[in-house]
Amino acid sequence: MADVTILATGLGFPEGPVVCADGSVVLTEIRNNKCSRVTTDGKVSVFSECGGGPNGLAIGPDGFFYLCDNGGSRYVEGHSMGIGPHPDYKFGSVQRIDPKTGEAKLLYKEVNGHVLSAPNDLVFDTSGGFYFTDLGKRYARHRDHGGLYYALPDGSKIVELAYPILSPNGCGLSPDGKTIYVADTEGARLWAFDIEAPGVIKAKKSHTPHSGRVIAGLGGNARFDSLAVLANGNICVATLTTGYITEISPAGDIVRAEKMPDAYPTNICFGGPDMRTAYITLSDTGRLGVMQWPEPGLKLNFN
Image 1 (cartoon, helix red, strand yellow):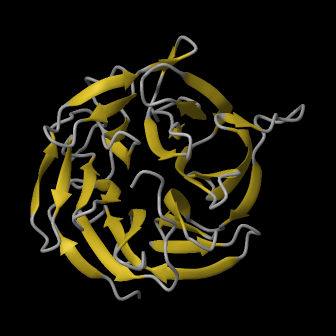
Image 2 (cartoon, one colour):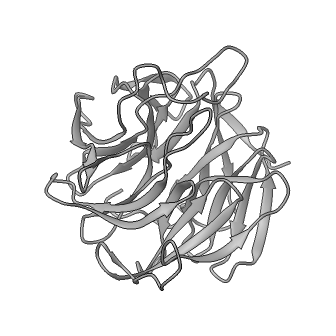
Image 3 (tube, one colour):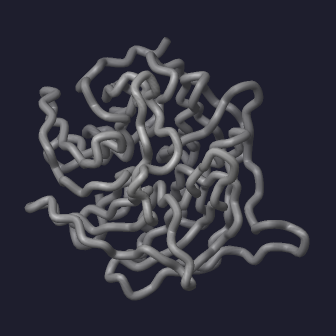
């Protein structure tokens, strides 16, 4: 078991942690329909009453926070995870949050005339645009397809890059910005897409659903959630059900697997002076954990 210190408790299925300049962590609470700030001494306060199903979060080039909102899920007593869409669910969206007021404004809710289903995670490139995944809503007898998209933070452009993908969750850029990694939840597969230009990925070959290539996968009951890339290029993937953070090399080797004190570690981000302080959302128990990682995380663009 990894040496994880619990920084905050009582969170409603936390996700999307972002380390701020003052050392605090802003994260999403999917179950509680809001974003919260956790200070270095573990105090929790409301950052944004955004509503819906706030999931992935990132700081953009303008200093505003950009949010992937899955549109809301139905939660029942005794289950930490959502059980299908919320009764009021209409669509998923990408929102822009003012860091001073917490006001959340709708940025995107559709692409090519199709509504977004359940946007999940996002990452900004050096040019100021962002890649984001749409997990797709799961229903009792069917599910929406997921996909990978690219958009600009001013609301002027959104494009579909890879569709369909079964269940695209976490995403992250390689240190050189030439690869976008996507964690596929069901089946625990880590995909890599080659980037040819900002918002342009290598074209798919015939008879393939998209142009991704499988980097690695896990067997058994493992499922992949969100991820973070390290400065050395390795990818740390939050691994559900089995309860690990799995570090994978770009070649697909399992470098290390750190057991978490939770069955649903959903996300990881890095901060601290040496970027080795890892913050991990422990969502089954509603906690934020912190530990020292052997290698430094990759500094995110604009963060």
